[in-house]
Length: 154
Length: 424
Image 1: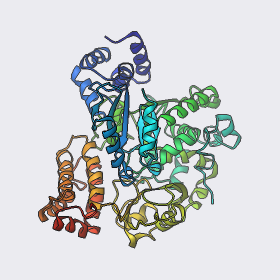
Image 2: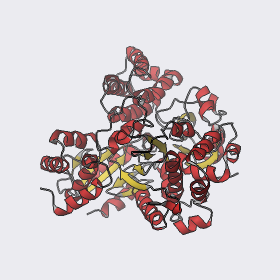
Image 3: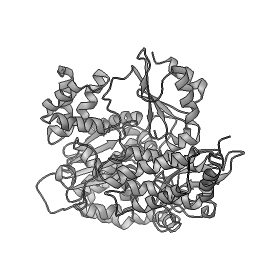
Image 4: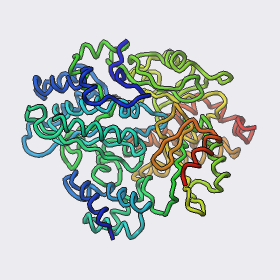
């Protein structure tokens, strides 16, 4: 079931378009904002609310990289693996984070504190290597800097 | 040297408020357009300025606008700003969005007026959180001041401006895929024709313009097309944001006249290569452009001059390949990106790009065979324009085909040595 708050927020987006189904991506993002990820149940709820089929909504949900169809940790580390970050050494940062947290790309730590994902170019190429944690951007990464940053995300 | 686009941007401080921007002349183009010019006059002015689209393809902006039917009195039309900057190595629109959102809003009001659109959307890259916050703040200010909403500046012109934060896919930068995404669907490209100017968002006439393109509009209306043309060193007109990333002394972004040489950007503005790194090649405008090499350093950065050198200016943000980075690994990284970002709709792209990536991976990891090079060459033709539904795979084929041409010996040494010579 969608919560009242989720419904209100989705309706606000619906009003920006000529018909409700256009707010499908916004609805997925709103639900994910509240629950961390989008479950099968949530797909059905959104479909019903926007008068779409479950398959339509799932087709959209699985198309976009930033909609999570599996549970994720409390903090999502998005490490840029784009070409500029490769030249500037993201691979050694990846190895460092992998060893430190004992997870590879696509995995979550057992305490659900971090999920580690690759992300394509973050538009911070002149300060590479770059990453995001949740909504925050970081650049000029070094292993020492990564240590300090990760500490702030409980 | 004039720098109209970045004049009021200070990356170390917050952007100008509406009042501050108006004090330095901001929005005067809006006043002029809405109060003294007809929509057709605005379009003709942009046409005569020869403003070419800054998103990468370089299509004439005024021509794009003039394709929108203007006789139709009934029904809605749309203006969409493509701010889904996701081309690897590109960071120019982000600078404009975070640095001076009012410059974009002013341009959008005029563009919407020219095509008589009542609704506009900014399709924004999900990762650009700071840009989103600044844009929303600026849009709210513009509504409060009567520059957006009903009866703008008392002229009777109405415009609603919305921000749509995307959910992340490179293909959303393709304008018809972007329109599907704005409609809440999977971002697969549409057949053209009909072009968006005739049937675009929600089946209505729509213009999609890049951020940097729209940022120019108010300046051109204010200062005229001759002024705009005088800004470039070549005959195209205007300045351009150029960027450099990679192993250079001062990676960054600069507003320079169109026609500035690759050498000047690389050696003067980016400070040249870092000590102990040599220059091997560069992609002039993002990952989907052909390599240029040492022979091309005196090429002028403009749409037609870079095309004459066998590449594309694209977004104008260069990625430098240095001599300590393996060109095969460089290409594998790029082709993995394109393979992952294929929308999967047409077969050559969906199947061809992963094939290319796997072969590059085999060569890089020491399992390369000579026939792999034939397959790669075949793929560059198989993925060329005309064989795929949109420009995604042809874009991916550009660095591959030029990489095979310029760094052929490096491919051979990988295969002969059965290892990557760059790895000890």
